Image 1: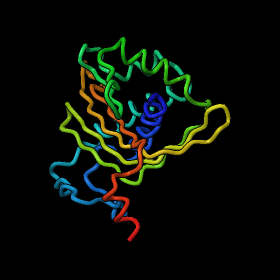
Image 2: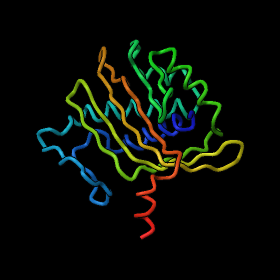
Image 3: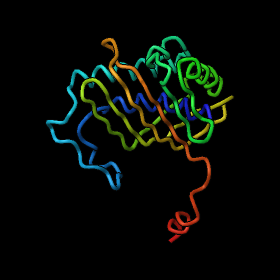
Length: 187
């Protein structure tokens, strides 16, 4: 559970490389994707840089296990939420989000996390932003290497002149795919 939260933080750094940009790389394996926004709908480059700075701050604090700096990237509102994959993986409000990250810090070896995102997208209107990515995370715990897929989505709002997360969601499939998907892969 907390491994997924951790991977989310690092995935955000990877998403920062193209957060809020108006196009998806041609090599991205996306199906049923919405059309790319027109240039008029593209995010302001200044906004993109501001959001990237928040993502960088989050990931630096995560890597350093600096809880106070990490929490500065979240909106201090009672409905700010971090979501995981399954039932019960919901942390609402500053205290619960802080508690989730406190536990997450126990679930990885420092400096062992890497995330590669094969698809990422996002946009902003200048006051709210959304981000999404599909990634593969790698880390270790007590020297044992781990690898797992990760989907990440986030919403941010500009409050008092600063961008902050209002919602951060990551999902990590932990079971084999449904039988229909397994059969299709075998053909």
